[in-house]
Length: 328
Image (cartoon, rainbow, N blue to C red):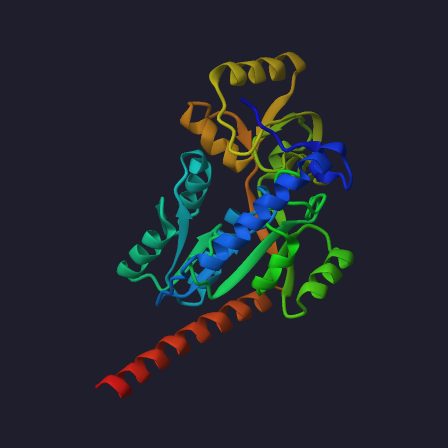
């Protein structure tokens, strides 16, 4: 069954968002109460959380991979922590394909304990900003410039998992897409301490699709962003087909797609995440776009990461010193 994001999530005022607003209020109150009573767990390993407040399609996993690579390059041993959900197998395959260390578990706390036992020295949570049970040392929130916060309302009236005000719990925000001064001002009103960075996706194999007529399809958080990426790189996209995020394709659908492409004399092209799902079904000949996440002012971001890792290390040494001084 296809469950797609409703269009009214991107409209400021709509009949459906007004009707659903009371449920959103209840959801927000429930979340607030849970945060009050939850007992937060602290760990010796530095924890960086890459999260979002917009539902899906903000690029958490590509950023988690990028941060793991950056931390590895400064001589640390990072691991990505991912909560296990069977429908997220495509993201797991993507992380493994990039050669990044990964631990997945149904319980994030158990996964972090495992990372400590295996002597990793930085844990990167791919999602988990809403998990108040874990003390994080650095929170990085992802936004996509095309969607940002939609209509600004909480699920189900809008696309937000939390109110925008919760960004005050983050230290860094990364916006994928064009610079947006208006949104930056909105962020700074909530907290002037947040550092804002921008990123973009750089297609690596775009040249092979030049002068070809394409039928593009995608089952990701925001398929239109993928289609726009193709058009922005001057590819001839004749037809597009969207599926929900982490969509589980079936053979009938795929055979129909292949037939449509053949009859229309178009070449099928999809995303990396879709590629991994289709590969398991035996569809290895469908082309996909390889992308690399490019971060503006990357060196500044690396320095921010170093700062928070250093602060955590200092905290650990101080605690060890005080424990030794007072209890020995």
